[in-house]
Length: 320
DNA sequence: CATCAGGGCCCTG
DNA sequence: CAGGGCCCTGAT
Image (cartoon, rainbow, N blue to C red; front, side, top):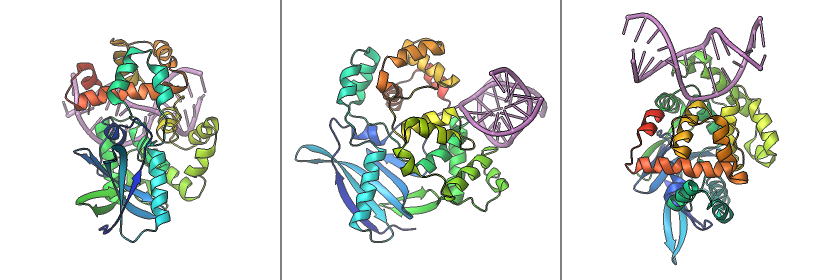
């Protein structure tokens, strides 16, 4: 599908603002639904039953940093619609987040202070809707990055829509309810294994209207946790990702998986294996910003790697 | 070649 | 509440 219509709008982010570290996370695995080249991110978006292409650029207007968002579509879009895309973009990428208190309060820790200096103005956030993130969360389970990427690619290639916009060809996620009348075996053929059942069940719950992302956003963390955990195939590890990336709770940090334990041990203490309580003692120092603090430290190492800096323990553990 | 451990979760006992 | 089973892939 060729997206021949486009509209551009401007977003004023809170300051300080780091464009690249906000729109590009080197630790997120790359698939053909988004692309980042020379400081420009492109991505697709399934929004209110339209398949969109989005492009972001940093614009300087009267010396002020602004985000220029261009929305590509296959039909003329109303002003209200563009406004809704803009609002959702601001939400997903936390462009209204005020980081000043966090920065002030965290300057005491040397590692965090260095991470903040390096990535100052970076926002946490994720491009995906809850539905899409649940699918990603499920294919992350019990699999290496390489295999997760392969699974997501297989799904996108088979069920996604190919969009052409701004000289790019990217795939857009399928509609919610796509797996309503699809058997488990068809998904298993895409090498997702036992995860096929979880994907189908979650898709069904969305299309039955049992789950609404915007309702969930208004609920308390505990309620969100309870509802997410009740989904088939979603456990504590997946909920932990969701609460941060999709629901923007900076204070929740309760889960450390074995591979993360190894990486945190090196990052925080420069040693092979710290105990889980040791790691939590360090993390809990950051109080209501503990997950945000770890995000800054985590991203710092990924950006170092992206810029060519090699740590043996890091390479060994991430197995790209 | 065979065996095995993963970036979890569900289900059973 | 502990532990076996599940898929596929790459490492050994």
